[in-house]
Length: 165
Image 1: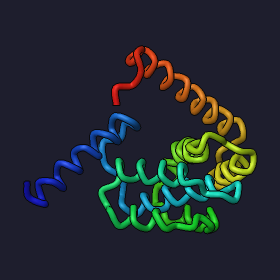
Image 2: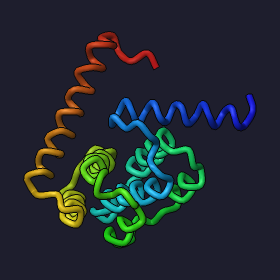
Image 3: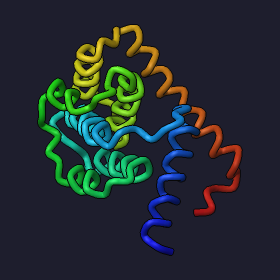
């Protein structure tokens, strides 16, 4: 397989994933990726510890949705200590993706098994910067919890004898 063919197939897979998950008909701009993923890590670092599970969750997510390996390499070493407002300025469509960012930030924070009050405080700060009300944040948190329960229910129904892999 040629490099060009592999890139086209990767882009098709990413395009499918964005459409399936979010209903997007196009792949977001590269400029949006880095800021989006950095913001997720900053929120997870809200408790003063960026757990390996949290970073790994973002790296996995970024790898699935991102066609730029340079961004992935930056995220692997990212200290997650930048100012959120500065990071948000790096995303030209943040106003359009802000609610999904908050949901993904919550998922990142919870990747180590805990969504702590300190992490929630940073997520709340991010929501405020992005003009998301406390009521909207609460709805997004409820969606996160429903998603976790639905995933558990789906896995239990599909693999009643345990996971094959």
